[in-house]
Length: 89
Image (cartoon, rainbow, N blue to C red; front, top):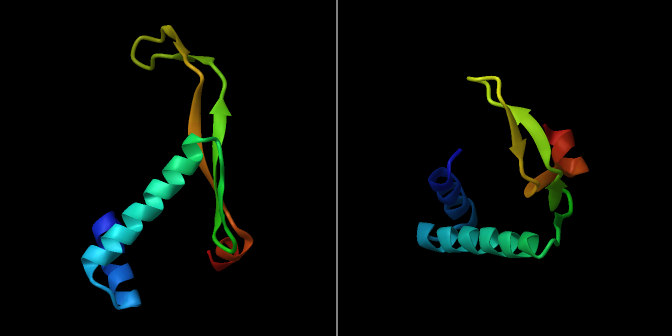
């Protein structure tokens, strides 16, 4: 499912226009992004938790040449499914 399909489903289920559903989805994504940028986490009970994880610097290999390369440390977004969501899958 892509964003357009999700917006259409949200609009249909909630009985609102696609423009309103798109605005709501954009607002949700923006709120989660801003919270994660501040090293916070977003917990939706029954659905899951969005959080930030830090990856340490490490060495890797270029698959074409086999040369060793350094991979910088970085922060990555992480999602952990809640108990109810995991049970439904």
